[in-house]
Image (cartoon, rainbow, N blue to C red; front, side):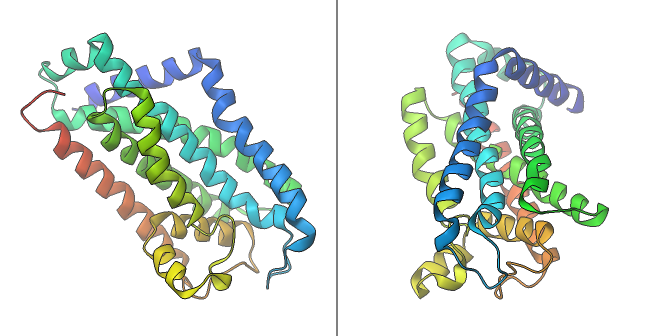
Length: 254
């Protein structure tokens, strides 16, 4: 199982770096979005932790990069089906769980690397990470990378066209990102919106990254424990992997 999963993981990584447009498409638009929106709203944004909007928006942009990469990486499932590669993998003696693990982990590694590159820019927003907070941020980043790629896998597994895949992904992932606290803090949201944000696993990831990057805030009162945020992020990743394995284990072929 591990050997088959690593083979698929290696294939995803090699394919990614051979398609340079995917590298640019996943990281450049969020960076531009962060700089333009953050600069434009910086003077009109006030937070209890005295952060400007470029600082507040940085963790949300980091999650956005992971989200974009998850969308791009799981498109390969549809391409593999059209090329016949997925059918050949399904009839091989490799366990179905290895297919899910290999595809998801490959996309997660790519998302993690791109998120890490953006994280290196955190010094430009006045952040100086010590070793414990850096390790915590990396654990959150890896968990959310795996979870979002797993969600993309679930959606792509039964899709026949990339156009339909993009439409469904935007229906799921973009609202998740908007309701994660990336654009506005939960404290200023109306009550019904707070409920949706609390049910959103990305909210805990964004909150955890905010706490890792900024010691003094913006610590959400409803999420006081960094450990709890980490547990939710890991649980989300584990759930996506379990569901992906179950959908792969069905007898009928996609």
